[in-house]
Image: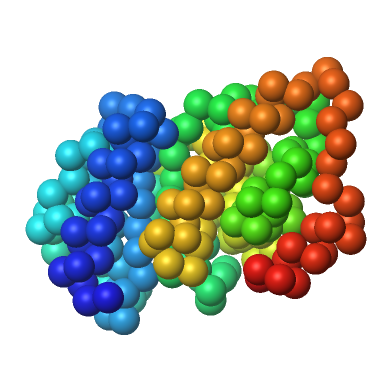
Amino acid sequence: MDEAATRVLLSELGASLFARGFSVGSAGNISVRLPDGYLMTPTNSSLGRLDPVRLSKLDLNFQHTGGDKPSKEVFMHRAFYQAREDAGAVVHLHSTQATAVSCLPDVDPSNPIPPLTPYFVMRVGRTMPVIPYYRPGDAAMEPAIHAAARNARAILLANHGPVVSGKTLTDAVYAAEELEEAAKLFLMLRGQSPRLLNAAQVNDLLTAFG
Ligand code: 13P
């Protein structure tokens, strides 16, 4: 897909996420890796009203080269791209249920949501660690995200929200949506003893679907 088509797709997916309540106000940011750099949503922009031609363009060193001023979370996206060669896109949301899980003090910080459904495992993977709280835009969180992203396609920022990577932009958005659904199920089932996928079933999914 060329850059012009990627700009249109990013704007369409942002509008779709916004229309379905995965993002409100100016929350969230999305980026895509290109051969010559990155596209990123501008800071303070609504995912519901992105203009393809005004998306921020960054060079391979994450320096702003075109479009509106990029998200203040550039370093969050950079941490994923530098930790994961397979990351072609990164989606950060404040989606309600995943953010609710990020506020729970009594979950396993190395993997707060257990393997409840196949699509959560297939899209998000085996683990999704919680990173301690940092102020939005605080570049001090970059080393923690980088370390966690080496072993995980997605993370939860404590009291803030999810950051999800994918091989493609569409994959990253689908993973962010599956994560939100898994968080919803996890919260619905809290205090009960749901049947989880066992280790063999998780391994089978990851072998079959990567
Ligand atoms: P930006 O508007 O700078 O992208 O920040 C939004 C956000 O979600 C902060 O975490």
